[in-house]
Length: 131
Image 1 (cartoon, rainbow, N blue to C red):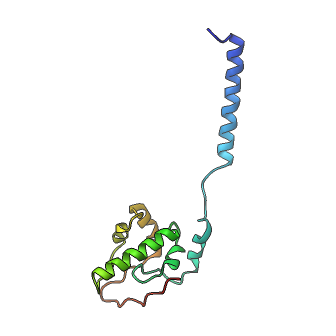
Image 2: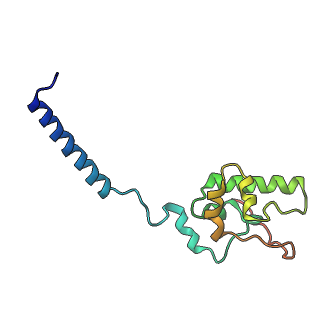
């Protein structure tokens, strides 16, 4: 063998110390975050749920787990659908959000508590102008 018995013991001891220090550091520096970071905290400022058919991108961007790029993508998709199908809502259900590039099933589920989808009986509120 290349290593002597005493060298293997020292190497094993070093690896054990290194492994224990990694485990302690991983426990101390946990990556779990209890509160959403940044602008997501503004979601508590909302009086009620947002209608993705009328909300502007800045209001949508304040929702947890939805950044500025995704909020703008939602508004762009909504405007395209409205242009192609006048009088039709782009988002009738939560599942319709998944038609926007970058929003999958998990993302849509995370947004569910913050959004509302009016029925056809309800008249939509006027759309806010983007900044």
